[in-house]
Length: 249
Ligand code: MG
Image 1 (tube, rainbow, N blue to C red):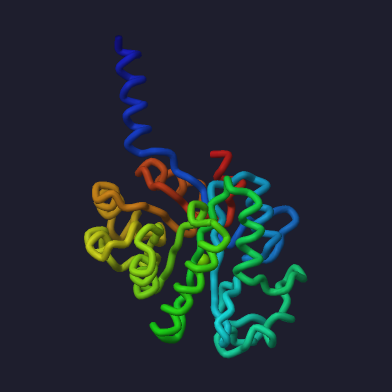
Image 2 (spheres, helix red, strand yellow):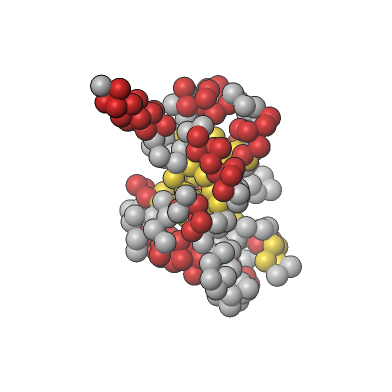
């Protein structure tokens, strides 16, 4: 009898907490051999290890072309102040040319089992951010990738604008200063915060977020012990540079 009760408790626990899923941060670049962050090769590596999702960063050129790059600059060239035709010869450290969002998404589409976590980077004005949101939504819809994509951003304007332009998309806010209740009131779907927010600064926020039905995600978790702590607290996702190692935990 006791054994049956224990099994029931475990299944209820699993239902309440679900399974923590792994997201490769800027693709699985930290492979053997290593490749460039946010490269097409890093996305293909993520597909090979069958991770839940692969994250990447989106910037916009002066003439409104969406490209995948973490920094505002590539090789000292400022993306927002450069046209795509001037930018397209720029190379990543692995020799690839800077990927357009369209080419990146097309590679992602080849394996529908790996979610594409699109981080829209803050731009210089809300006007430009609104433009980027519109272009990203349109492209993803055009490629019929709506069900494979989630959005994240440090820009609150981008998060709000995504929901305003398409209420059906899933959006998580990255910055870490807004409480779960504030995020819920803004109509945003989740919080993707640095793990120290959940484990040190606001120890009650994970539970609050889950109670409010928000998606919970923690970045950038590169220590298996921290991963275990977050997993025990029932976080939905962790974003990591070591997806291969955490998948084995
Ligand atoms: Mg990112």
